Image: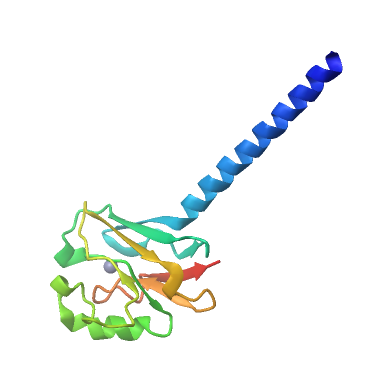
Length: 158
Ligand code: ZN
């Protein structure tokens, strides 16, 4: 009887451990597909690099401006382009104006973007990785004029 109880407990423990491992794996997967980025009244992103899992169906970037200055003075957005393209896109977008998020209209080099937000505001963007290539070098950046040189970081699909 004692042996049977031990075998029963061992079986239960194994199931519990497998269950916990699955829950942990699921939690990790969802966390890696959603990225929280903060900006403030300075030219800096809270993240200098972002890595997402190649298995993500959808990636969501949440951008939060914790500062107090309005978008016209210290606006920020989150834009994704190929590393080879991003500086040219930012240059081409300077004349577009705040309403166009300082991005050139209908430009294929702009892969993902949020609107420009000011202090106290938040925005999000969700996108599929199916159009991106894990072997490509991508950079995320803020397209507000004068910000791009300091506000950029690497975006990696692993
Ligand atoms: Zn900015």
